[in-house]
Image 1 (cartoon, rainbow, N blue to C red):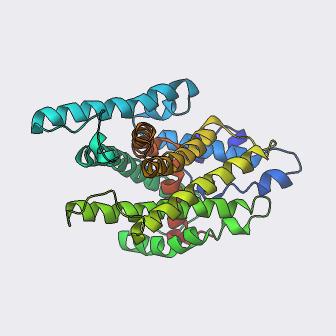
Image 2 (image 1 turned 60 degrees about the horizontal axis):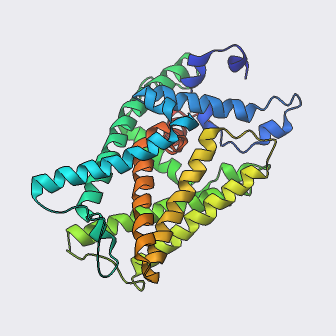
Image 3 (image 1 turned 90 degrees about the vertical axis):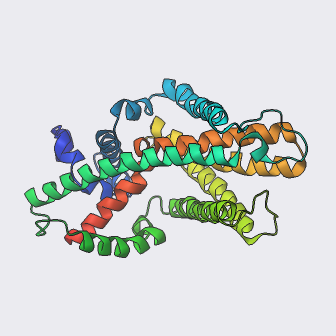
Length: 331
């Protein structure tokens, strides 16, 4: 807080300390001066995400409400352009906005096109994270050395991986968050969202192998165990994000920035459009089903491509900071 009051931006952004806070709100509630230290730490983390992401204008755009329509339009345009280009190159119709017969979402947007579009977005995010995390890790290590918070002169890759393995159970159990008192109930909603994403990642990986390895294409039966996992994960995502939105609305004294609402809206939108596309398909409502599915693709691409620039990037930077703290012996 002293460094923040003195405006020592570099010291704050290049420290792992702000990321070891789980934003439970205990400090703001108990602060005798009502200084809202939790809001200060949240602002520091937001600034760090902007600092370590490139290009920076994209990170800045995600913090401006007026830019949201343009940012949402980008995936739609990208899908159309890639579909057109791939169609000309491979002489195949990857896009068909007038599909007939049984409702199959791949009739409108080819599975090949979906995977190319999503993998390029994920690749861009991975490259951005690689460069950002590399700088972040170097900075927090130099900061720790300068302040005497570690005796490790260098970062050993093997030791860091071992520290990551020890840290993962803490993250999955939400052990640190459960130590909070003010917003302890948020641990449940956070875990619902976290495990929903893990479940959906498993489902996506299995179906990827089924399609390209086993040549088994969808739609898949609702009796398929993998579909059970997909449906449970989708419902958990909706419920978890709804509870998080409700919790923020019930805390008028807690400052919520635009980026907070954007993240919550994005996660809720992922769940609603995903389940909505499936339910309307099962109901035989072709028009709404294809429309919702296209919106779902837009939201997924938005999540992947803009991940390193949004608040959701805390999943990566906090994990790195917690792992470094474990590696460096910081408690």
